Image (cartoon, rainbow over all chains, first blue to last red):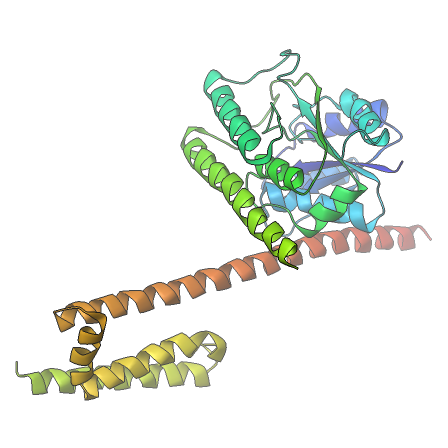
Length: 239
Length: 121
């Protein structure tokens, strides 16, 4: 199956080159696409220098818009599987094969790489884990799907959801919201264990100040998803 | 100040308001589509200034004792309506701009690759 690895990148000049080399080594059968989200550092010239396959947004889109650009590319170019990998080197592309296998077997529509199944590797801080557990519970309550690592940006989707996400994708902090949206639209979601590294360079896009906003925004988004879907299915039943 | 004086000042205010809106519409600084709510509120203001008794009827209709409070409630409701419509316009434009950026990025890649290929030939 035609597979695309999508790498949203914002100011990742130091990590991208090794990540791309790793992809070429460990998964030569897959294509990749870096989405440069109008980085203010030398990301663009690094990409050009190593002759990478990339698209470059002329103004900053935010992570949701950047990832969606990847899904649009995958949709237009007929890819069967699209895999999101963070540009900061946290995700080990060795797991791409495992994810592809799950999608190929038809076992799941969306596969999420989770660091909390085997509890190995980088686990992030206690406060952050508590926040993730809360969101995980909320998502379970709203959609009935149990996902442990709801903020993981390491995921793979099949053609059906490439099409859906190319059409519609949440704006900022999209990861937990996407789980609810796809789960409510009937996706089978599976988590597989992965080991994540501590980021080698750059800083997390979510700092202490933003984390409060993050929790509120994501919680409201999840609840609204549930409510609006209730209305939509209600309308369908009427027809 | 007598109520006559206030009414003259307010009438002038409403006239300036309409002149400004019409001027902006003429110079295309304002889109007619988005100015309908402003024109509507201007008409309401005009009616209230020319026939102040409408306010008393209005407040009685709303079951509010003091006409001033009725005016305040109406004004706030109108402002909220305008702000909501603006937020909805911004959201729609936000979506359109995002799509434009994405399509532009994808197009840039195609053009770049075409240029590179034609150079090789």
